[in-house]
Image (cartoon, rainbow, N blue to C red; front, side, top):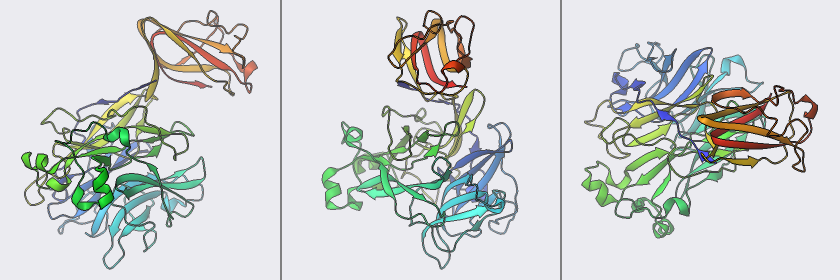
Length: 457
């Protein structure tokens, strides 16, 4: 099994160019497609330190507009695309999602999670609702969850019929916790579900990386973790009922002397971040196929050369998935509120539809057989890519691994080419309805090919 990576486009989709973005656009962003329009709620920080959630829209996913909404003013001007908070306050944007709970009223179909402290209120994780994604109102004057200083994620999980939240857990260093709840204004207690481990920490060069020991207890200083996970960007894959994806930003902490030599403004909390990839079938138990970056940092000196934070959500197209992520050319602690201006970019990466992982066959060929799979439908389709000289054949077997009559590998019409969805046929016939509801094994015989996914239709 091979983990595939998206292709960074190098596009600067959203850049800081407004007074309320005068420090920069940051990493806590959400994207959805809404009635054919792409909407991006993005994180902006002004040079006075105020932080805002702003709305941008696009028709093609590349060119984005910042509409003058006239909802939240900034320094006396109503010509802004700010949608939250209504006035400046201690605020970290979190995620925005469209609520698919059948009980959700239309006036609350959009939900926003934000870590904030309203004037005179309690600091914590609050939930706001909106009928249109632009006009927001807190659902409750009390926080739904404790303060959680990160890009908290929330969505309604139709598989289990409950809301799910992913939050920051401090357990020596940063980890990811999960909450499950019915009342979106009361998240309850989290459980830790994703963490760094010994494999993440081994062989990190101590001349470059170290723990921020001054902020940790004695036990943490003893273990000296040198990386943790800053954000989760966990969400449910919209094309599958039981596939959950996480894109955690791995934060590699610089050793203070190393950071000082680099000229950082905050050597006690500085480092680089790139994006990893994890999957789950239930949203609780997570698996990383490998530890290499899913989103790598760009070339040194480029706009994406120092940090990367995946936005929550993705855009699915007939042949591709589009990811959006906040990127910068400055490391985590190396910026100056008093002097730096218009930092950061929100950019895009493209990947084959359903192309996260694949089974790959070498030029010399190979094969594998699935466990017994019950199915419904009439035919089998593959998402596959062969070389000009490659092929894929599929054999249907019974539970005892015996080929079904008429469905052997020799009977299969070979597939040659690059297909997002290719129906498999055996001597010109595609029908499998006689075996629907009965367990079958699939034996794939491949040469110089990648198999990304298969499904019964």
